[in-house]
Image (tube, rainbow, N blue to C red; front, side, top):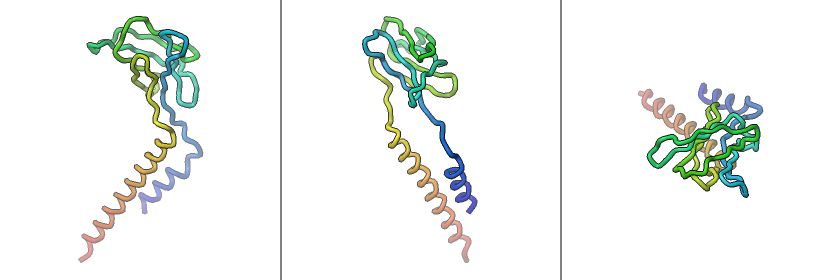
Length: 134
């Protein structure tokens, strides 16, 4: 009963969720230029980008401007890491935009996880009740 009340309270009380993730897009027509955005299209103006070489060392670090744009150096790198300093972080590779999981698929995965946890709790509570009976 307690678990059900907490689950219902968690699902029903928040009127709106503000979760988002970082996206890195290479800008077309602008060589060595990327834009760091949140998935709602807002520019990640406080993001910093680090480029990592083949040996794993950081070879360059830069910051996004007010539009989320970052001019990358022209030399090769193995991967890049964008971090907004607020807990959002994403890795990207040269020439590729960051991979996105469609929002509807992420929502279905989240609901499925919650249902799995609820079913697991129900299973163990029934098992405990059966063990307590003489």
